[in-house]
Amino acid sequence: MDVVVTGMGLLSCLGSLQPTWSKILQGKSGIKLHSLFPELPPYPLGLIDSQPSKVNTITKKLLLATLQDAGLTLPLPDWGVVIGSSRGCQANWEELATRRQDSNSNSVISNWLETLPHQSAIACGQYLQTTAPVLSPMAACATGIWALARGYELIKTGRCDRVIAGAVEAPITPLTLAAFERMGALAKTGCYPFDGDREGLVLGEGGAKFVLETIESATRRQAKIYGRIKGFGLTCDAHHISAPQTEKGSAARAIKQALERGNLEPKDIDYVHAHGTSTVLNDRHEAQLIKHVFPQRVAVSSTKGATGHTLGASGAIGTALTLMALERGYLPPCVGLGNPEFDLDLVTQQRKVLINYAMCFSFGFGGQNAVIALSR
Image 1 (cartoon, rainbow, N blue to C red):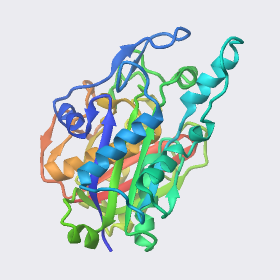
Image 2 (image 1 turned 90 degrees about the vertical axis):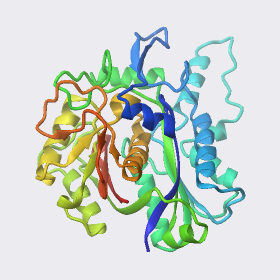
Image 3 (image 1 turned 30 degrees about the horizontal axis):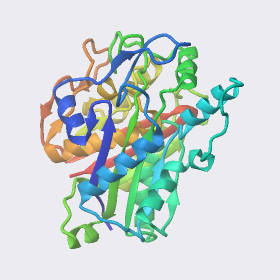
Image 4 (image 1 turned 180 degrees about the vertical axis):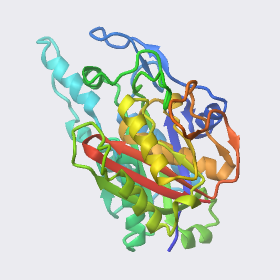
């Protein structure tokens, strides 16, 4: 039973799906310097608008765009929902905590039940009017691919014929910025994945959602197909709260799982959309990993130099852009890369090439590793 993607919605600091794709191919970035919070210095950020977005707003926009792209109308009572987020409605709770310190302000969230960590999944389920499973995975920066894997499994196990899956994130808050700053992980000028002069990550907001269904279902309704999900791998290092395990790590096992489930070998993969956070440790670890698993010098790029790092939504955005590469026959460049540090086939400008099989990587704090294999 093949599982295919028949609809996509994406939102980033570059816009919706088509504008984001076009601008990345042109080497453009949506990252700009912003001074948003008086208690913090200016940072380069990937904002959708002039001020930080709320996760509920992103959730609704993405769902509407995904349904429209797939040509679907409501209600969809038998559709599964798997929407993840690593931060959820954290911004709302930070605002509440701030107001509580001000004796003259109202410190109550009137609709606090709509600010729980699984709110995005619940909101989507309510909008679809579904009675099928509604799931909300949370696996740090691996959340997006984790959600796609759960949606894939709902279909493969026969629990659902069709699923809306993806991830959303609105992480630009004082606490998140301060935390990454204390870790020494934030860039000062921009995001330059795999560059010898990289400074660190740049936070971005947005997400991506997908319509997943069986090939039989897609054929019956004559749906357009972006690509097939061949397999996935999910592992955990259980090694360190933030640093990847560089020796005997399980990221390679996640890649192996995805290849085996898709009946593929490393030589079959034409393109890897890397996690590519632009941090010293991640990029070095990932470059070593790619060289170890793919001795044939597979083409590699990361789009975070254009969109910023959307944390839990980054794997979903990366998967959407990888599917666009499969459908359109262009590899997206590693925006911001000027001085490559690693001996990889890094894509520095759009490259026209036939892509049959591709993979997207996503690695999160706590040793979370998520990999998805896709095909035309």
